[in-house]
Amino acid sequence: MEWWEDIYNRDIYFRLYETEDIESVAEETEGIIKLLKPQPQAKILDLCCGYGRHSIELAKKGFKVVGVDISEKQIQHAIKRAKESNIDVVFQIKDARKLDFNEEFDFVINMFLSFGYFENQEEDKDVLKSVFKALKPGGKFLMDFWNAEKAIRDLKPIVTEKIKDISIVKEWKFDAANKRLNWKNIVIFPDGRKESWNHSIKAYMVAEIKNLMEEVGLKFEKVYGSLKGEEYTINSPAAVIMAIKN
Image (spheres, rainbow, N blue to C red):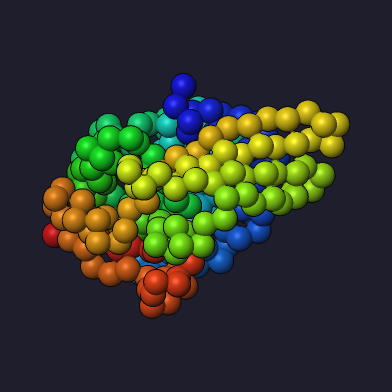
C-alpha cells in the first residue's frame, strides 16, 4: 500500500482535519475564482479532490465541476457531503496519472499540496500530461503547491500539535539525495491509543515544476505567493502556479 492510500483511506483523517478545512474553503475558493476569472458555467476539474470541499464550493457558485481522486473513501465522503448540501457535482475514483478526459475542461485545479507524491518523476509528469489532455485549448491549470525552499529552510525535526482531544507528533526529515520532504505522523488518542502513518513529497522548486509543465506542453504563466494573488517570494507560504494550454 502506498502512503497516500494509507492515510487518505483512514476515518481519522476526517476527524482531524475536516472541520478546519471546511472553515477555510470559502476564502480559498474565492481566491481560485479571483485568479482564474472563470466565465459563468465554466467546466472545472478538481484533480485530487479529496472529499470534495473545493468542488462543492465551486459548484455552489454555479460552475460545472468534476472531482476526481484515487481514494475510494475520500470520494464516498465527497458524494455524501454533496448530497447533504444538495449540490450537483460529479465525483469519480480516478488515478491522476491515467485520466481519460480529452479537452473537456476550461480549468483544472490541483489544491492542497497534491502533487509530487510519486517516487518516479516520470509519474509526476504523467499527472501533468493528464492535465494537458483534459484541458480545452486556452484552458488554465492552477496548482496550489508549497514553497519548498521555505519548507526546507524552516524544517523542524519534531512538531507537536493538538486537535480537539487528539495529540499529533510530526517527525520531519529532508532527504537531500532524493530531494524529498518526509514526515511521520503519530496520533495519540485520549485513551493512549496510537496511530501512525508516513508522508513523502518531492520538494520541487518552482523552476522545476515550470520545466515539467513545459515538457508536456503547458505554458507556465505566473506564480503567486498564495491564493490571495500575492507576489511570490522566498518567504511566501505557498507557491500557487498558473499554466495555460495554448
